[in-house]
Structures are given as structure tokens and as C-alpha cells.
Length: 137
Image 1 (cartoon, helix red, strand yellow):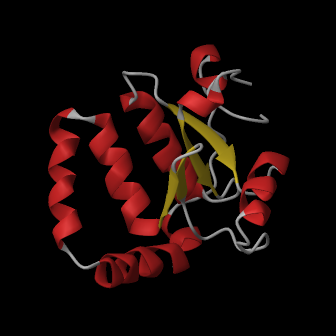
Image 2 (image 1 turned 120 degrees about the vertical axis):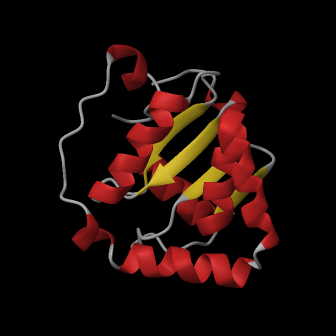
Image 3 (image 1 turned 45 degrees about the vertical axis):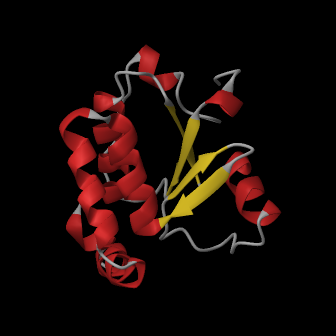
């Protein structure tokens, strides 16, 4: 586990979801500034994050982006901020912030409801460097 996780952005995701694991892999491959860490919502760390904020600890269909001691974002706003932080061409996703949150979250929810149908669960094996980016692997 990474020791200085307070200085990183932490992505919480459904560890049992193929779509979620695809996106974690996608972020890992583009995280050239080494700014993201990852934790499944089902992990002890993920459960602590949820319970400390009064969020449901048995619902895993939402992605969270947490900047410790600053903020956390959910659903479409988390996705857009991740893209923005990756920089480069992905900063263009900032245009998505022009779409009202209730509409972009509606699209997020449709994808989330169907996520188990969209991708098979795949066993992703991170590189040793990428493995260090997971909290409680």
C-alpha cells in the first residue's frame, strides 16, 4: 500500500464489476503524473470511507473520487474530474461540466444499472508499479 495516500486522489470503485475494473485499468495506463490510488468499495478502506460520510456501505454502483482533507465527488462529476486531472486531450471532458449534474448523473445511472451486462468480469493483473497504487490489494 502507498504510504502517502493523503497527497493523492483516491478512486473508489466496485471491485466486482468488469466495467469498473476496465476504467481503473484505463486510468492506470494514463496516469503519467502518478496522482491516483485505487480502493474497492468492498475493501475495509472503502467501507470506512463510506461509513465516515454516512453513505450506504452495501451499494457499490457509484464511483467516488476523493482528495483527502479536501473533497469527494461522485458519479459523473468524479468521472469528469478524473479526466481533467489526467490532462492532455482528456481536459476537453471539462465541456461535460456544462451539462447539468442531474442529466449527466442520469446517464451515469443508466450505465451503472447495466454495468454487469456491459462487460464480463476480467482478472486484471496490474504491473508491480501499478499494484502499489491499490490500497488493500
